[in-house]
Length: 172
Image (cartoon, rainbow, N blue to C red; front, top):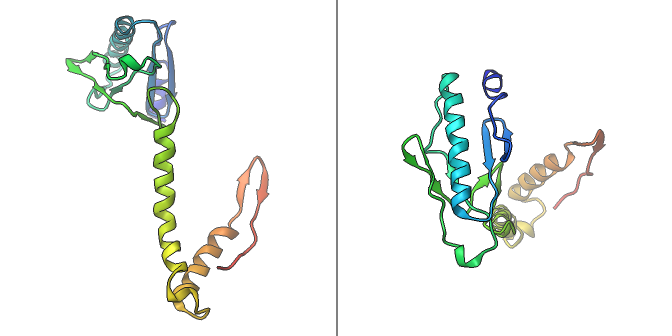
């Protein structure tokens, strides 16, 4: 709560957009050249530094990342050169903002492939169980544990837009 009181009135220049969620702040700048974008972001960081100093807040440039979203393939490897508090900010090709992995062209290809790998990793134990001798024996303690686990997950209500959606019990 105290952090929100401190950061609620952060200054933001008119020609730049910012997105604030909890303690994550994203500042954006748009222009036709890399140099102008670098200048806009550097100026925005100077304004933010003054604000932080006047409110006794200490920013961490080591955790700050910069990236450039564009469709120019010839500039795909170009990185922004921005310094803040005497440190060059880290350029990242795939920044993660609020759990979503972004890429240069905003196709979300990297995010989708990461999500696919996570789902496959979580499905592997179920695949192994389905192909084992436990799957053929209905009285197997291992199968019973999986039934209980899956049933307890499926029975819990899910709140969405003031409607309660409950799924019925299903067994393996």
